[in-house]
Image 1 (cartoon, rainbow, N blue to C red):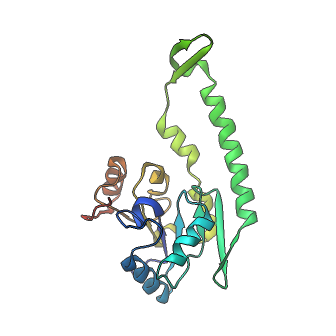
Image 2 (spheres, rainbow, N blue to C red; image 1 turned 180 degrees about the vertical axis):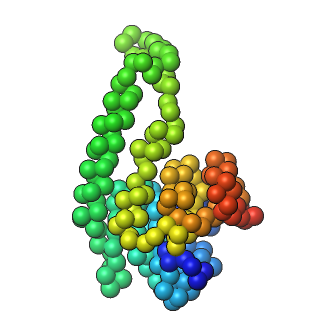
Image 3 (cartoon, rainbow, N blue to C red; image 1 turned 90 degrees about the horizontal axis):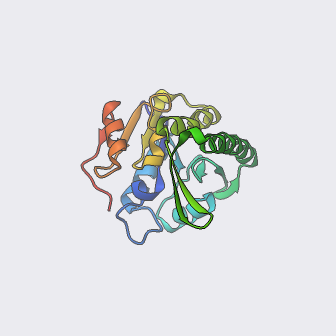
Length: 208
């Protein structure tokens, strides 16, 4: 732990998986985060949850510490804490809104290209569904906002621990983002493969 300066943790199935009620951290996780905070190790979330909803989870837990940032909606929203009260980071949110607009423009240009259509199915008059040839790697690359996150947090990748489990977490499971990686035993297959590939730890603990 002496090398780690920041822990990035996913919320849903990583931090909350298997715990009921599904609205607070397990006590052992709260104690762990408080302990690392006392050792001057920062932690942050990066999840789909809106920052204010994350704040409810923190308040319902026995957690004493707070993240340096509560990053939500898959990087689109960011909450900052001052005197244990959460505020939205307007500058962050504006920057990522611009990022999302550009991504959507590129994505819609991509799916509007008829050269990528594999098949067209007519269900009834004037109602169709289109099947596209999708390059998953290309889309993931366009979705990778973690370089912006790392730059804004001003912490080198070699000092960051990433803890995640789902397909949408794949962009941050990367040596360009962090240096230490952990995922639960029953994470998405691609996540486990990626973590093993970059010499991370696939835990023998399961999420439920």
